[in-house]
Image (tube, rainbow, N blue to C red; front, side, top):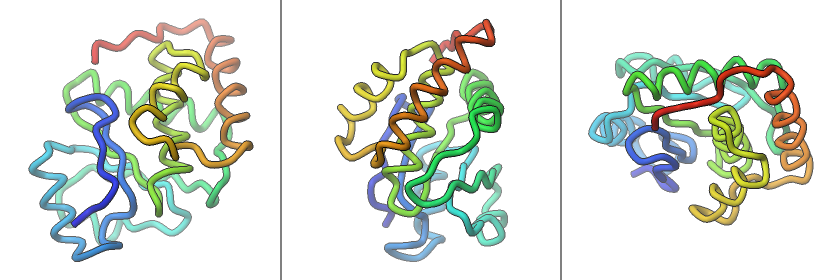
Length: 160
């Protein structure tokens, strides 16, 4: 069974480690289905999508190097897309391999797009799991991402 599954925003945004790493992929996919997950975001460098596609989830492969960060522009596009899914009642699961560094970074970035500061997004997320966001590079990225998002002057509200 999947380990590290957590609702970051109840019934809207979840995080976990790599599906199929601790047991059969089918069991993890069944679990995600029972949790109502619609979209799965894979952050590992190698896609798991071919194996996941057959389960009927919308799968997005957004590769980030282990312990690394994405480009702010790419992250902004991804997070805005995911926020729209969440606003439409389509729960999202974000995962990498261990489910902490890259996953925590993207979860925090989603919260920044929703209007939180980088510091508040990180604090909120670490209240759920103190190990989310694992490198100083990832922490610095969140501050840079907040500045970028704020510079766009876009509507950052979400109803979740």
